[in-house]
Image (cartoon, rainbow, N blue to C red; front, side, top):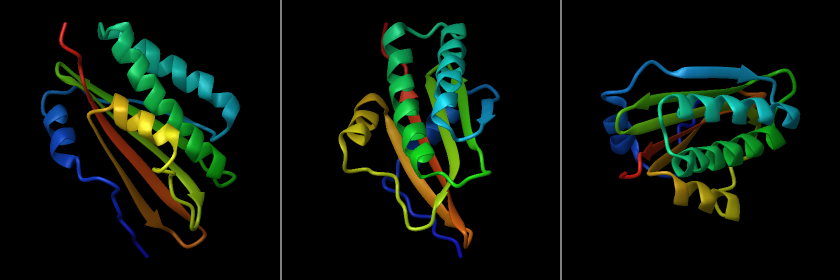
Length: 147
Protein backbone atom coordinates (compact mmCIF):
# COMPACT_ATOMS: atom_id res chain seq x y z
CA UNK A 1 0.00 0.00 0.00
CA UNK A 2 1.36 3.42 -0.94
CA UNK A 3 0.49 6.63 0.88
CA UNK A 4 2.29 9.56 -0.67
CA UNK A 5 0.97 12.35 1.53
CA UNK A 6 2.72 15.67 1.65
CA UNK A 7 2.29 18.27 4.39
CA UNK A 8 3.02 21.06 1.94
CA UNK A 9 3.39 21.24 -1.80
CA UNK A 10 6.61 23.16 -2.21
CA UNK A 11 7.81 20.98 -5.07
CA UNK A 12 8.05 23.95 -7.47
CA UNK A 13 10.50 25.76 -5.16
CA UNK A 14 12.52 22.59 -4.66
CA UNK A 15 12.65 21.96 -8.43
CA UNK A 16 13.78 25.55 -9.02
CA UNK A 17 16.71 24.97 -6.68
CA UNK A 18 17.52 21.65 -8.37
CA UNK A 19 17.84 23.07 -11.89
CA UNK A 20 21.42 24.25 -11.50
CA UNK A 21 22.57 22.03 -8.65
CA UNK A 22 25.51 19.65 -8.48
CA UNK A 23 25.28 15.93 -7.78
CA UNK A 24 24.14 15.25 -4.21
CA UNK A 25 26.36 14.56 -1.25
CA UNK A 26 24.83 11.54 0.47
CA UNK A 27 25.32 9.86 3.82
CA UNK A 28 23.70 6.74 5.25
CA UNK A 29 24.02 5.89 8.95
CA UNK A 30 22.22 3.71 11.47
CA UNK A 31 19.24 5.65 12.92
CA UNK A 32 20.78 6.22 16.33
CA UNK A 33 21.22 9.40 18.35
CA UNK A 34 24.97 8.84 18.61
CA UNK A 35 25.19 9.18 14.79
CA UNK A 36 23.72 12.71 14.76
CA UNK A 37 27.16 14.25 15.29
CA UNK A 38 28.35 12.55 12.09
CA UNK A 39 25.38 13.90 10.16
CA UNK A 40 25.95 17.39 11.60
CA UNK A 41 29.64 17.31 10.65
CA UNK A 42 28.96 16.21 7.06
CA UNK A 43 26.26 18.86 6.59
CA UNK A 44 28.49 21.58 8.02
CA UNK A 45 31.60 20.67 6.03
CA UNK A 46 29.64 20.23 2.80
CA UNK A 47 28.08 23.69 3.04
CA UNK A 48 31.24 25.45 4.22
CA UNK A 49 33.15 23.84 1.34
CA UNK A 50 30.68 25.57 -0.99
CA UNK A 51 31.30 28.96 0.73
CA UNK A 52 28.01 29.19 2.62
CA UNK A 53 27.73 31.75 5.43
CA UNK A 54 27.65 30.70 9.06
CA UNK A 55 23.99 31.76 9.33
CA UNK A 56 22.88 29.73 6.29
CA UNK A 57 24.83 26.68 7.49
CA UNK A 58 23.21 26.99 10.93
CA UNK A 59 19.75 27.14 9.33
CA UNK A 60 20.29 23.94 7.37
CA UNK A 61 21.84 22.22 10.38
CA UNK A 62 18.81 23.10 12.52
CA UNK A 63 16.42 21.68 9.93
CA UNK A 64 18.44 18.50 9.41
CA UNK A 65 18.88 17.98 13.15
CA UNK A 66 15.15 18.30 13.87
CA UNK A 67 14.08 15.97 11.09
CA UNK A 68 16.76 13.37 11.84
CA UNK A 69 15.90 13.46 15.56
CA UNK A 70 12.23 12.77 14.84
CA UNK A 71 13.03 9.93 12.45
CA UNK A 72 15.51 8.40 14.90
CA UNK A 73 12.95 8.52 17.72
CA UNK A 74 10.44 6.52 15.65
CA UNK A 75 12.85 4.38 13.63
CA UNK A 76 12.59 0.68 12.96
CA UNK A 77 15.50 -1.52 14.10
CA UNK A 78 17.86 -2.67 11.40
CA UNK A 79 17.00 0.10 8.94
CA UNK A 80 18.99 3.20 8.03
CA UNK A 81 18.82 6.99 8.04
CA UNK A 82 19.75 8.68 4.78
CA UNK A 83 20.72 12.32 4.34
CA UNK A 84 21.36 13.94 0.99
CA UNK A 85 22.29 17.52 0.12
CA UNK A 86 22.18 18.83 -3.43
CA UNK A 87 23.90 22.21 -3.62
CA UNK A 88 23.71 24.80 -6.37
CA UNK A 89 24.41 28.51 -6.79
CA UNK A 90 20.94 29.51 -5.50
CA UNK A 91 20.84 27.23 -2.46
CA UNK A 92 20.39 23.59 -1.56
CA UNK A 93 17.88 20.79 -1.47
CA UNK A 94 17.93 18.41 1.46
CA UNK A 95 16.46 14.92 1.49
CA UNK A 96 16.21 12.87 4.66
CA UNK A 97 14.86 9.33 4.56
CA UNK A 98 14.18 6.65 7.12
CA UNK A 99 11.95 3.80 8.15
CA UNK A 100 9.57 4.51 11.00
CA UNK A 101 6.93 2.55 12.88
CA UNK A 102 3.59 2.25 11.07
CA UNK A 103 1.05 4.83 12.14
CA UNK A 104 3.62 7.39 13.24
CA UNK A 105 3.89 10.74 11.46
CA UNK A 106 6.54 13.42 11.64
CA UNK A 107 5.30 15.94 14.21
CA UNK A 108 4.48 19.09 12.25
CA UNK A 109 2.62 20.77 15.12
CA UNK A 110 5.49 21.09 17.58
CA UNK A 111 8.11 23.76 18.09
CA UNK A 112 10.79 21.77 16.26
CA UNK A 113 8.83 21.68 13.02
CA UNK A 114 8.09 25.40 13.32
CA UNK A 115 11.86 25.91 13.39
CA UNK A 116 12.18 23.81 10.21
CA UNK A 117 9.53 25.99 8.56
CA UNK A 118 11.30 29.17 9.69
CA UNK A 119 14.78 28.25 8.47
CA UNK A 120 13.87 26.64 5.12
CA UNK A 121 12.29 28.04 2.00
CA UNK A 122 10.26 24.94 1.15
CA UNK A 123 9.58 21.55 2.74
CA UNK A 124 7.53 18.42 2.16
CA UNK A 125 6.94 15.06 3.82
CA UNK A 126 5.89 11.88 2.08
CA UNK A 127 5.17 8.41 3.42
CA UNK A 128 5.09 5.01 1.76
CA UNK A 129 3.52 2.15 3.72
CA UNK A 130 5.40 -1.13 3.37
CA UNK A 131 3.30 -3.22 5.74
CA UNK A 132 5.67 -3.70 8.66
CA UNK A 133 6.80 -0.07 8.72
CA UNK A 134 6.60 3.08 6.64
CA UNK A 135 9.25 4.86 4.66
CA UNK A 136 9.35 8.59 5.28
CA UNK A 137 11.04 11.17 3.07
CA UNK A 138 11.40 14.77 4.15
CA UNK A 139 12.58 17.19 1.49
CA UNK A 140 13.45 20.83 2.04
CA UNK A 141 14.83 23.68 0.03
CA UNK A 142 16.91 26.56 1.29
CA UNK A 143 17.73 29.61 -0.82
CA UNK A 144 20.99 31.31 0.08
CA UNK A 145 20.68 34.59 1.92
CA UNK A 146 21.61 37.70 -0.01
CA UNK A 147 25.17 38.84 0.75
